[in-house]
Structures are given as C-alpha cells and as structure tokens.
Image (cartoon, rainbow, N blue to C red):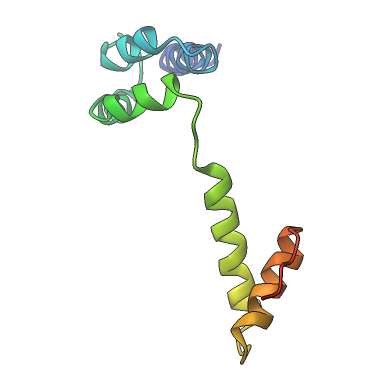
Length: 108
C-alpha cells in the first residue's frame, strides 16, 4: 500500500515462491525471463541473472536429489576440526566425528 513499485515487486516475488514450492518449472522460468512492468530494477536484474542459470534451476526443481545432507556433514566435520585443533591421533579425531554425528563406531 505504500508504494506501487514495492507492491508489484512483492507480488512478483510471491508468485515466484509459489511456483518454486509447487515445482512449476516452466512457469517459474517464464516469470524469471519476463520483464514485469512496475517491478524494481534491482529485482529484474537479479531474476535475469537467475534465468541465466536456468538449467541448474530446472534440474533442482525436477529431481528430488540433494546434496544438502552431505554438505551438512562436511560443515560439522569442519567445525570439529576447528574446535579440536591439535588432535595427535587421526583415529581419535575420527571417533570424535562419529560420536558427534551419532553413527555407530567400528574400530579396526
């Protein structure tokens, strides 16, 4: 209600979010490619940059696979490395990782 540009930009972004959540790939990419009148220049520019990466976006919305869990584990391991700086023994470090991630420990 404050500004026409703000309202148009908000409606545009909400439509993009709806398409994303409902996996409407073609409509999502159409919206990214379209130049909607009244939408802020900054938003249009960012959407144009997203449209250039349309193949990755299409794959991300089409397939149910994600490497999010793997990235989460990697992030935890890096955090443990920062905290546990100075472990002299790799097996102790590995055991610490397994204990924090709550996996079964198998000692060789």
